[in-house]
Image (cartoon, rainbow, N blue to C red; front, top):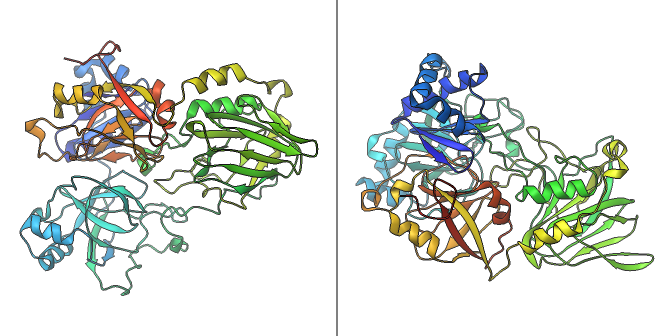
Length: 558
C-alpha cells in the first residue's frame, strides 16, 4: 500500500483480476458503510482509494484488518453479461504509429491490422477520461510500450495500443499510446444511457473499414443524438435561458481562455469522470464570499490576456486570484477595480481587465452566481473530458441566477482587500521562483536519491504547453533507476498534484483536469496546500520542489 499525496492510497494487487476483485469488494464495503472514502479507481494492477481519510482508515485497520475487510466483502465480481451482443468498433487502420508498432513487433503493418481485428476483447475497466475503456484480450504479439514522450494532443477517435491493452480516445486529449487507427464511433455521449459505449465486462471487436465506409456506425447501440460527439460542449459561455436567470454581462473580449467553473463533480470516478472544477479553489471560494454567494456558486475563470464586458443590469462583482489592473467605465467616468473588494456596476457600464501582472487565473464572481447548464451535477468546464459549458468567447452572454440573489443576505457582501493582498504577494510571476512542497511516491522506488536530488535542486521552467490538465516542466531530465529504465508501468490511478515522469524525463504536474489514470511513474505529489499556487503558474515561471520527509518537513525520505 502506497500513500498518494495528502488524501489517497494506492493498493498494489499484482494483477488485473485481483485489482478488479478488490475494487468490487471495497465498493460493497463502502456501500455498506464499512469504508468511508470518496472514490475508488481500479486499474491494471492497482486500486486507488481517494479521500482525505483514506490512508488513515486503512492504516488504522492495519494490513491484517484491511485483508479482513477484503475477505468480508469479496464475492462474485459483477460484470456485464456475456450473453450481450459484441460491440463492433469500425476502424480505419492508418494510425501515426502503425509503422512503429510493426517494427516493435517484428510484423508487417498488414499483419498488425489482421491480428488486431482477429481477437475478441473485453473491457477490463474505464479511466483516463469519460468513455475511455481499457480493453484486454488481444494478441500477445501486439503488446508494445507507450511512447517515450506523450503527445500533447491526440485526435478524438484514435485507436491505440499500450502494453496488453487497446483503447479508443473519446475526444482530443494528450496521451502516450501507440496510435494504429481511428474510428468515428462516439465512445461517450451524454444523450445516451449510459453515456459510455464501452463498459466494464462488455465484449468488443475491432473491424477494419476503408475511409468513408460507414466508420461512424457501431452496433448494437441506437442512441438518437450520438452524432453530437463525445463530450461536445454546449453553446459557448454556458448561457442558459432559465426562468430565474437574466443576462448579466455581454463579453467583448474573453482573452485566451475564459471558462465557467465551480467546485467540480467529485465522486464520479466509476463513470471515468474526474472532479475537475476550479483550478484555484481558494480564490473561487473567496470570490464567492466577497459577493455573498455560497462557496459552490459558478464563477468565471479568466486566463491569459485581457477581459472586457458590458454590464446588462445592476450587478455586484468580485475579483480574486491573479492580479490584473482593471477599470469600470460608466456615466460618471472611469474608476479602478480593486482585487478583494466587491464593486457595483450598472447597466451599460464597461468592465475592462488587463492581462495579469502576477499569477495566471483570475476569478470573477457575480452576486447570485453564474447561471450555466449543469452536467453530472456541476457547471464546471472539464477541458480534458469535454464536460460542462463551452468556453466564454467574444459576444457570449453571461447569465446570473436572479433567484439566488433574492436568497442572499446583504450583510454577506464584504471586502477582503488585505487578505487578497496577502494572497497576491504569494502569486507566481514569470521568471520568478515558486517553491512547491512534495510528498514522495507512490512510485518513488522507480527513482534513486540522485533523481530526487535533481528534482529538488534545480529550477524547473513552466512551458507554454501547460494548461488546466497539467503544468509541463522543462529542465534536466529525471532518470529512472537501472531496474526500471526500460520498464512499462501498467496504468494506475492519478491524483491532483501528481508529478508524472515519462521516459524522456520531463515531468508533468497534474492540475484540476488531470486524467483519472496514467501509465508513467509518479515520483511525488504536491501537497494540497500548495495546489492553488501551482494552478497560478504562468508560462516562464520557475518551480523548485521541496521534497518532504515522513514527518512533513523538508528533506529526502531514506
